Amino acid sequence: MASYALARTYRPQSFAEVIGQAPIVQALTNALSTGRLHHAYLFSGTRGVGKTSLARLLAKCLSCEQGPSATPCGICSACQAIVRGNYIDLLEVDAASRTKVEDTRELLDSVHYPPLMGRTKIILIDEVHMLSGHSFNALLKTLEEPPTHVVFLLATTEPEKLPSTILSRCLQFNLKPLSEQSLIQHFSRILEKENISFEPTAVALIAQSAQGSVRDGLSLLEPCIAFCGSKLTAVQVSELLGLADHTSVQSLLDALFAEDAIQVFALIRQLAEKGADFNEVLSAFIRALHQIAMDQVLKKESPSKEIAERIQLFYQIALLGQRDLPLAPNPQMGFEMIFIRLLAFQPWSSESTANPDLKKNSENLETVESSEASSINTVEPESIEWNTLYPKLNLSGLCALLASHCALLKQEENCWYFVLNQEHSALYDKNQEKVLAQALSAYFNIAISVSIEIGSAELHTPEKIRQQKAEEALATVRQSLEENPRFRQILEQFHGIIVPDSMVSLEHE
Ligand SMILES: [Zn+2]
Figure 1 (cartoon, helix red, strand yellow):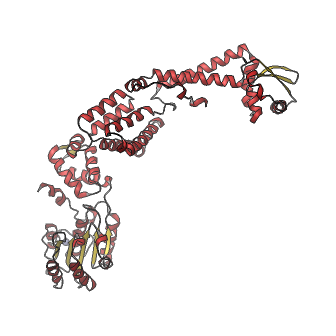
Figure 2 (spheres, rainbow, N blue to C red):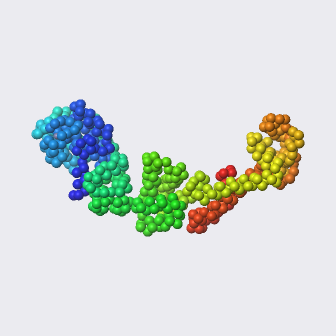
Figure 3 (tube, protein in one colour):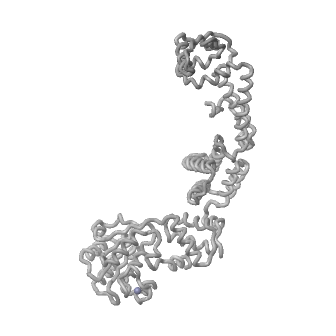
């Protein structure tokens, strides 16, 4: 069968070819080099991570006519027979299919006969946890007093099912699931050797689906090669593996970055028509964001701070969305809500190039402020003077509050006359005149006295000017929001209204 071809062809033939298990390879290499060998090894780990491949490789190291060696020659009759699978001193059984006591007894009986060709007789038992209780006892007896010419190589996906008496007599190696990166490298090398060109994303998709298993990955790679022919494309691989269409995810990202709400929702509709699994699409979308962020870091490009922030924000929103997706009335609805959030929460406040309109608006705002300031300056010079002096005095408490509602009427000699806005007359406190006088005296380094009277409500007090500026800023933001085509699209599409009181100007808070 073709599906076994790749796995067999690319089974590691030396420790250098083993992928993703560096500590185990190191330990075995050291043991072989120093001759400190054990009589029973147990390889555990999830399916398809290379347990039996590693066991067969160790068998070759132990049996090589030039060895035992961590670098078997590969050309002697023992090495070649092991690769072919017909070495007479390597007895290989799969406990999952051979659980009868007699069979195990037969196998264990044979260990007492010396090897026929080599130095060592090797017993490889795959899925050893499947042995029956009687077989375990038979195995245990042999392990307790192993003949010197025998080595046991045991492999299992479920070491916790093994009796502790067996475990304690084995040198155990736990193989790790392979990282996506190791699998990508491994599959890319295989494709290069097979003279098949590929899109890196296509290989990455296979590696993701393999979930840490080389064997699963290879059994996915086989039909992909058959399906795609001489070039593996991401679109075809996605289709074959039933994954979220990679191009749809890319289009969603493009539309999102372009802030094109119409396009985003059109794409979602298309996905729904194709019967897409929105959970899967969202996962693919999150992976794509992660990939973009990783590329930015690893390529050491310095992306604009704004782009980096947007990706982080998108990632967070999508991740939270994924958590809540099962709670939505249906996946498409949940998915749409996530994209409304993604479209709505853009870092508008940052000085970005992506939002030139808003930047322009904030520039306008500054112009408005300064022109307003100058107009006040010509009408009532003393007010604006007080207005600019007020924050420099660093007043606190009641005095700050009182002074913020005052306008400076006149200065005669060293006495400053203030008018307190009538509507805040309740703030008047004779003692505060002294506190304000002290602050002024300290600031100008001369003795100043203060007199406050209650008067007109039309004064340009620091507080009035602050409020005026805040209102104008809010009006500008509101105007820019109403003129923003994307915001209007969302508003129209979902029949939204703007609640005026819900708006706040962050700059003037
Ligand atoms: Zn050899």
